[in-house]
Image (spheres, rainbow, N blue to C red):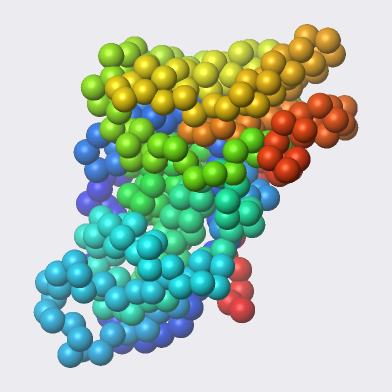
Length: 372
Ligand code: PMV
């Protein structure tokens, strides 16, 4: 599919004067990382993620047809979007510029948005200051709400198109958000060996996933609950003139190909080696950019060291991955859950801020919930 397949023009607002829709949308954790983009949110390499389940955003979008006299013409200028945002019950005007930018980017594909006045009400299942980025779950929830409006204006669209376009729109809000529509494993970024993969939207991993990965666990250790030191916008930009960028993008393509096979064969040793290397490479890119950053904290390294020791001693299939921050995602198969949970509680939780961690596992994607 191409960009023009996502343009929706033939709508009649009068058929849908007002109402509200609600979506509950999960976060995701990349196994092969997306770090570097070009043009209109086009990734420099393929990325593959596990969709999560316990970490989600729930967003209600209330819409009301705008008074015709408030609509200047068919070509409204960008300041003319009409929306308010509430996060966990509080009005958040400081979130507006991000949503404004999102609306500007998606207007071409969903032009009906300028004919509505919106109230966006969002909340996260995870604590606000946990260092967990909410842009993936937040932007995908909003994209799905907008798609629900499109579906009401045009009931003929198929579920497959609905999900593809939701992912396409979410990508324009935050790249990784396009991987938060469906589960359990999502691929984003065109790859010659992964059928159906696209730079424009995420797709479900198209091959049978080995049972070893069924209900895979992710315990998120909250090492640093502070705001992100480097925004991903800045991070992606730093890849533009990065001395190792070309090698990195090539490596990510190779790793996507390797992990595709690993996910099908169920080789956990190879999975661990690849996933940990991807996490450390992401951080190595930040350490070697100009300006440079160290986003890990001393406790991040202590946790990694403990995981390595425990793995060597027990032979259990525990490993870690990292986002662009200090928190550690501990990944392991469901059948090793009991032993690994005991280890986490006893040995790793003390390195977390206030002993806080979140128990999550692979999820099946976003769900529309009845309006409250
Ligand atoms: O979606 P963005 O633009 O916030 O980028 C996120 C990138 C990482 O989370 C660091 C890696 C990834 O693939 O999710």
